[in-house]
Amino acid sequence: MKNLIYTALFGSIMMFSSCDDVEVPATMAMDISLEHVLDGQTLELNGKSFTLPSGEDFTPKKFKYYISNVALRNSVSGETYVEPNSYHLISEDGKKSIDLGMIPSANYDQLTFSIGVDEVANGKTDQTGDLDPNSDMAWNWNTGYKFVVLEGEFTNSNSGERQGLIIHIGTNPNFRTVTQSLTGVIAGSPTSLTLTSNLDELFKDPNILQLSELESTTIMFGEMAGKVAENYSEGFITVK
Amino acid sequence: MRFQFPAWLGLVCVCGLVSCGSNEEDPASGPTNISLDSPDYFPTNIAMPADNPLTEEGVQLGRRLFYEKKLSSDGTISCGSCHQQQKAFSDGKQFSFGVNGSIGEMNAMSLSNLHWQTKFFWNGRASSLEEQAVQPIEDPREMNLPIHEAVSRLQADAQYPSLFKNAFGSEEITAELIGKAIAQFERTLISANSKFDAWIRNEVELTPEEQLGLELFFTHPEPKLQLRGGNCSDCHLGFLTAGDPNGFTGFHNNGLDADENLPSGLMSVTENPFDKGKFKAPGLRNIAITAPYMHDGRFETLEEVLDHYNDHIQNSSTLDVLILEASNELPDGSNAVKLHLSEEEKKAIIAFLHTLTDQQFISNPKFSDPFN
Image (tube, rainbow over all chains, first blue to last red; front, side, top):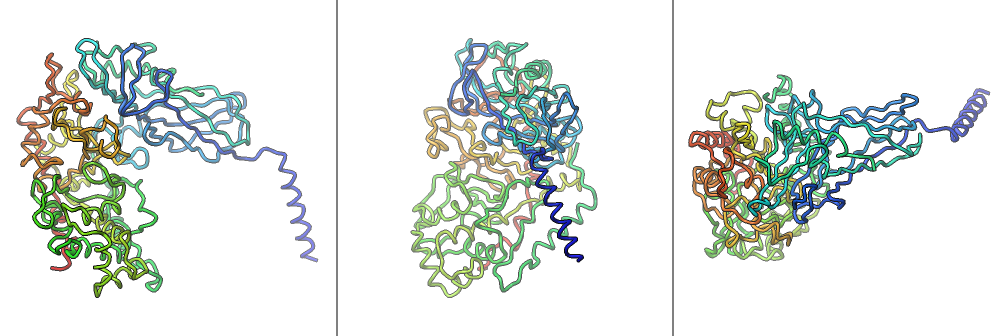
């Protein structure tokens, strides 16, 4: 008798679950991949020459940056997913994707993320994973992390000489948060988003960088670094 | 800000050390797995190769092979001949002698913290320690022994077949297993007990000169902001003070030669002309006891090395942009690439480099010649 009751109970559970099939699963897979583009072409390191917004040639050697504090939101319902411990070191010759794994299902229509490392994480270097200070993104024990690194060479239009460009932007005032709208994300469906990093945007909007005219082509701190951060706060990383 | 270790972390380290030697598997089921005994401020993202897990027996066999002179054609030299423990596994010579007095053309590299590196040899031609470890056996300028001959010598030995069986489960010796065993031993060559390490662990203070040197070492200069730097850590990264392990990113042209004399270096592996004259940036652990310096051993002292980076950079079409662009003074209109460090600053950097010497490492009996 008891067994029969259990069987009946079990059967009803089974039925319930089969009814659930038409409903939205509680979680959905989400990943983000990144594409790097300069002058409308796919970025390549250590070989190919590209044209900058200033018209100058530029051969990139290294391109790395942090994307952090990734969050998804439905602006109507207010449903929000905030990735915990969200620090991603993206580099042209390394990782170019962010796997959020299974996240709560929702019709997300906004993606928010930051460029750089927030003040709390930027204040310590005893961290692991993508914040491991053994990568070349930690400056030293006092200065925190580089948020955006672009290195390469160009021909100085005044001297005709090969010259290096070192862009290492960090420090808390240059931390930027970006929100982008999303379309086509359907609750419950596995979703792959693609972001494009437009390197041109480091060199323009609003501040045009004319490399041959710069007093120093090591852009690390101070006013010039702030100008590049202003450039990357809009249009640098966009949803494809 | 300094790496702050809570006191209990020390205890964890000790426990980790103890568990290292413990027997995690039934002895009858095969070799005993062990883990690397490394500090937790070393990178944690490099996995042990799945096809060559570290084992007690593998490391012991690898140590024996590392010092095995039978692996040279005339039985006179072993890996340990050019990689001597008391010199942090270098040999103090500009170029090393192989069998029959033949001479190499590259400086023997110091060996330490190799688990965190991914490309080997000065020109990066080996992509794993396993692959690297067997090449000098065959190289005619080094041990000059065809690998099949090495295999048959070991196979005919009274002891090696059973040692390979203990380590890898089979008495049948292969070139691949020789490489795996030597690689396992080399991974255990961890240098992490220098004064610099003690400073990281907050156990000692550096002298003011060493401290200045450390700060200069880890800073790229920016003269506009009066930020002074020695520009070293652009290539010698982080606590390991070693090259970037990501692909060939850790290979650089550091201005030793102008275009007309530029050796091919990494280009001989990648065939990319932008890689001409690039060589592996070595880890600088124990650098004060591994003279001479550079891929061709051209500098006898650290003073010469600092003078090179400060005053004698040769510009060329592939000179690293981080060197080309680094100066402690604003451009003066000349094309010379100079760092503009003061004498005091150069001395401070050298003082810091001396804090990378690890006496325990060079005297650790686990790393010594088992035939002695």
